[in-house]
Amino acid sequence: MSTDSASHLGHVSHMSHAISPRRTYLIGRARPNAIVGRNRETGEIALIIGGAFLGMMCGLLVPVLPVRIVLLMGFPLLALAAVYVPYRHRTFYRWYEINRSYRRLLRQGTAYRSSAMEAGTRFDGREVEIGPPPGIGRISWLAAPFGPDEIAVLLHADRRTVTAAIEIEGPGVGLRDSEDQEALVDRFGTLLKHVANGDGFVTRLQMLARTLPADPDAHAKDVAQRGDDRSPRWLQQSYDQLQSMVSTSSEQHRAYLVACMHYTRELAAEAQALARAARPKGTRRVDRDAGLAIVMARELTDICSRLQEADIRVRQPLGQSRLASLVHSMYDPDHPIDHIQAMSQRNAWPAELDAVEPTYLQAKTRESATRRPWCHATAWVKEWPMTPVGVNFLAPLLVHTPDVIRTVAVTMDLEPTEVAIERMLTEKTNDVAEASRAAKMNRTVDPRDVAAHSRLDQRGEDLASGAAGVNLVGYITVSARSPEALARDKRTIRASAGKSYLKLEWCDREHHRAFVNTLPFATGIRR
Image (cartoon, rainbow, N blue to C red; front, top):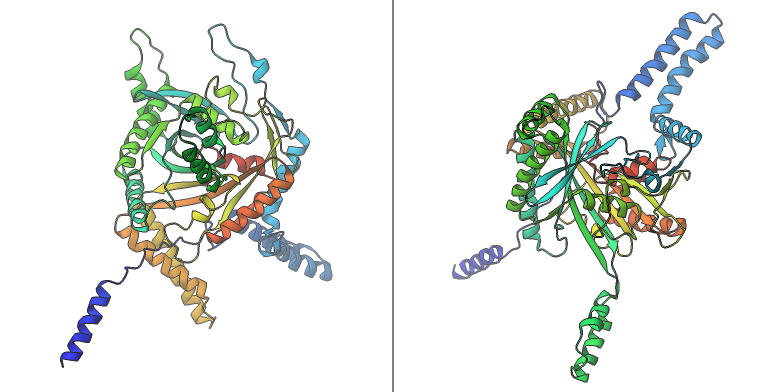
């Protein structure tokens, strides 16, 4: 009796010291939004219906029986093949618009040359504006006070959005314990919930992680400049030996948060009211764009307070010079991000840009040390992890890939909880109906569908607890000096993405447009 009690107490003691399981996260499968259908876009469904209609009309109007049969079967089969049959890792339907846009780009000319050197300055001191490269769209630069500094606010006329960016401290992947990382993620989820369900105008957030090579000899140069030559000889030799043991691979990691507002009637009314209140006395003209900048500064002030509650430190807002320097460094990684002297909205764009190559984009600035342009290639995250992953699942891509210049952009489109619950219920109804239909037809149950159902149930529980709905998309841009080095770095990034359970697809023939999705403009996702 006493032996059994002792063994039971020992078992209980052993269980009390057991390590609690780490929290895992599930990301749902990407599903196109269509009027009807489950996994097809509206254009694909329209193509199938059009093929069926043409086949039916040929069956009614063509008098020759063999030709009638061929056309009756041919048009629907061609439409189905264009939508479903794989073709170069995509489908013919996907490639059609890409090839058409690429051929139109080749006819119009793929080279862009900035006219910043010849633009000049107006008599009142304002710089003459120049157009951005292809794929950017029409942009207006504004400035708004943001605490003791100012922040740059961009108006995107083609997308009808307003964006602004701040620099934050990185998430510290690999520098925090798993418990601290999980707590940080929970607090960031609270931030998303407040932004999505609040009465503000921010509807989209973008996280940018920029990785650049740093000078590996910077510490040695600093020691040579500020070191004491009169220190003991043995101390100098010991420090030199210690310094030689340190890895010479050095990188700098910069993180940015971009807030985006969509232009709506309510936002226009709020901006007009603020602009009318802030206009100088004695003037009747109301600057509505300045009102939009004031609204964005107010929204970012609220987001910064939420970031401090989430233990994410805000380093600085990006004014016009800092934002121009950041955009310029993305085209030319040789340009230091913190070099903001003489940087303006006109100097943000590269001097030359060429999209003639289908597999990469070439860009060159006037301050480049060599005549060779930089080569950039952008990939989109085709598939997020389909299995439960830990909080640091992106560590191989963000931290554990040295000597590769890259930008990782994750754009999150926020939805209020009520809207997200309605969408989840719609997807749940479709899944249940599909499962019932498959059971009636005695089909074998796909285990991937079972996993998707469990993820959908977990998502419903999270939404019921008050979480916000988030639709996200990811892009990765790799930069190198030559096409050969770019091909090598692309293979390295693909391998690192595989370790993070991600599937990438390179945006061939549209790199000039895909590159924009890794700029601080919060683009690349549909609403």
